[in-house]
Image (cartoon, rainbow, N blue to C red; front, side):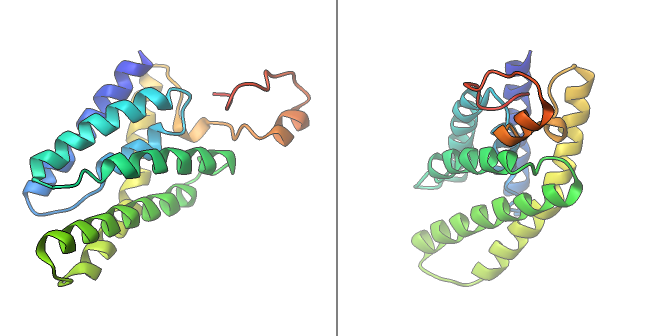
Length: 183
């Protein structure tokens, strides 16, 4: 059930990003969705699906370089690090990575736009608006996805443990130390 939820949530992110992009708004929903699902134990499946859907979205835009093939693995590592630092609960802890994910997406968009058009006109606006969209939309996305995951009795992003060894020892419980994180 978790894999089906991951697939359809990322597909929804891709379709909404495509619909908003056709309207003239760049909203990095696929990147935010990958950051969300990259923190879970099934991140390999989420990465595969996100790279496939992200490439399809970028081909629909007519981009020569599918930048999602570079950004998605980096975002997976960043989400694992963010989870390890214990930053999944709380709205401010969700706004900060959303802003950085949006900024990375905006910078990638600036590089692609300048490569194709050869101009820097409006570049700062694209980077700023994508960072602002990530700052606002990632907590909203976390809330909606966590609500739906709660209805399906799946793991939620805001309830993930950090998986750091000092927390395991502090809790005085036995865990399998070979696992990446405890969901």
